[in-house]
Amino acid sequence: MLDTTVAFRAFIRLSETREVEEISSVCADVLREIILGDFALYIVREGGRSALFELASGFDPFGEKSQDLLALFNNKSTGIKGLYCGEIRPIPVATGHGLHAVLLLERKAKIQDEVFLNAFLSIYANQFFLVKSSSHDALTGLMNRGEFDEKLYKLLEQQSHHQRNDDQNQNSACLGVIDIDHFKQVNDRFGHVYGDEVLLLVAQQMTKTFREDDWLFRYGGEEFAVILRNVTEAQCDAIFERVRTAIEAFHFPQIGPLTVSIGYTRMHKALSAGQLIGEADSALYYAKKHGRNQLHCYQKLVNQGELHAAKEPAGEVELF
Image (cartoon, rainbow, N blue to C red):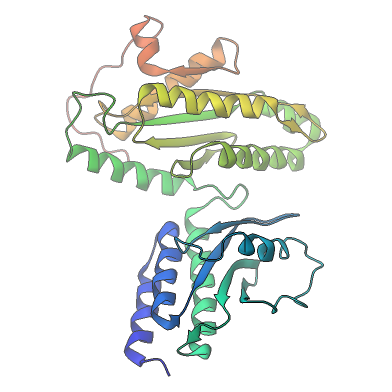
């Protein structure tokens, strides 16, 4: 029987967590307290015809055996018959919105309290859904505008405490804005249902192409925002260019090829969130005005004389 203090502390930690990235980490920490043996926790990152699973527990002791078991959950017509054989016991974690995660458990592992485990997994899945609903865009699954404002503000706060701005390639970050070219024509010609599908597919291509630690947001309409951290100027160019070419090469069903325009600015010299967004938007506007399907950096455009640097505000600017 699990100690009530441990159980109470576990529920408190879970209910206090407000970051999607941290909820699964908290869950894994609690599981280590109540499971005496090996386990791995995988969460579903994308639904659809096949689920994509992402390891949330930090380490998987089962190796390729895990992938074989998780593959069985990709087929919606597959039942659980035959899953409980071998040395690994898979425990699906579902909410009213479908499969959320799969806990892979060493069969010989000892669970201190099975009733508590099932209750905790259910509460974890629902807490994850509630937090994600408030911080992520319902259509694309990317973080929403509110989360963008909060993360950008916090990042600028952190940078103000680490004034290593003399070296532009050290601890640098950049803000990018991505806009789908001629998106209005998609809605006008094919309808908003197809327009929504384009937004979803672009978001999926972004998720696949950007790095795991990059922050991706649906900024509004057909516009997306991206924050890259700990990158050099050359890395920013390479990462954004990789995304631009990936979307250019993708075939959108019923619609065909589409492209995006991208503008970004380096964040190490920025004084305010408003200035950063303005710089990235200026670079994006330049890309749209000069033929679309292009990537441009604000600082490079200024150095080349293509744009004039905006005057720095005299005092603090409150954006949010």
